[in-house]
Length: 200
Image (tube, rainbow, N blue to C red; front, side):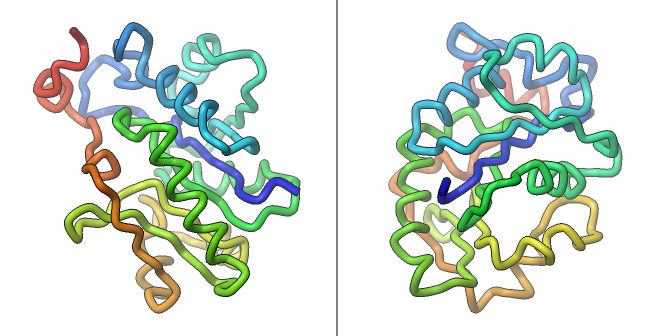
């Protein structure tokens, strides 16, 4: 049994970046989405889906052929629909779902593994577990939801993610302190991208 399914959300319209899709921008010699996929592939996560929507053909064309992709026909409605598309695509029995954001290129394979192993260490004792990484008391991503929340996640109606699911179940949340701010940093605007010098 694959213990945790990783769901990488790559369906967004990237509106705040302007005309360019941020996932196709260069990062360390390849596109940002290719970099994120490679980091997850290098981690211990073996059950992996990429949820596509906006620019699905362009993004899908540059991904490795062995990557399982899911098309979210409702991607314009917001992030929640992509989370739900990813969960619905996982047919195996899993202990949890790791929701990964594709505009966070600083998250490394080591970070994914640290969060994954913390979840696996605690899930049998806490079947309703939600794991959220934090850095200096600031909450970040990716978050792992126990499969206990599958129905709640699929029924969730707020369009922009599942923060409310976390809030409603805050007693079940375990925070994992990270040694670096990788889990906090994302790229939304041209300024974010230029400020990082990642396109050098």
